[in-house]
Length: 210
Image (cartoon, rainbow, N blue to C red; front, top):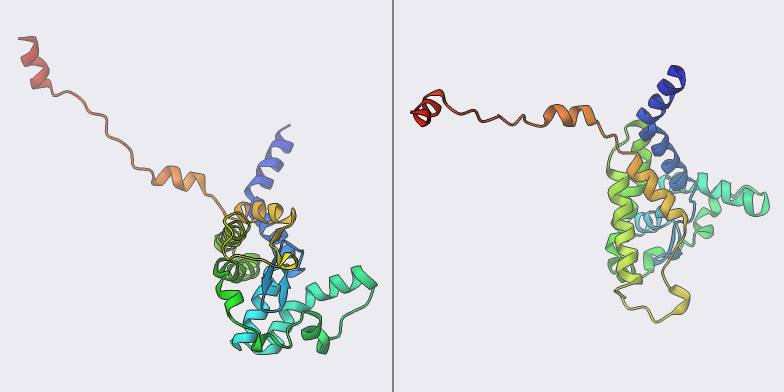
């Protein structure tokens, strides 16, 4: 009993590490989380949204963006037709060849999804070394952007082929994002200030008795 109890406590203590690794795999392997219009057409993963913006703005070299895309492209290629994608064809596979000429209004209308994708990708990569809150903020931003468009209708979309859609895997990403944050309950308890207990003064109590 003692061994099983200690092992369960150890698993709970390291829950944030396991959650951050699962979140990393969801992001880097490009598991579809949503479907939203972007510069590359329709994006289904935070990496796709981020890559289209990085290539359009030329912030990083194209090879850096390809290195970000390649792990997911390999998995998708093996699952679909058991082939490895070519490094030179990655831009064609993800429809990134013409993103520089695509109108920026598509991304500007969905700043929450764009910013959330940046945070999600960065948080997933950094979280492997040091889990933090970046993944959680990124996931919440993406969800708010999708909810705003899907429920509030902002921006207005009249094309049924470009409707926003959320996959059930988004719930897994949200749970992993929250679980990847390390909560130190002992530290919180120590940092809570102790409330002084008011005691009646002896002189006042004696005066009341008289």
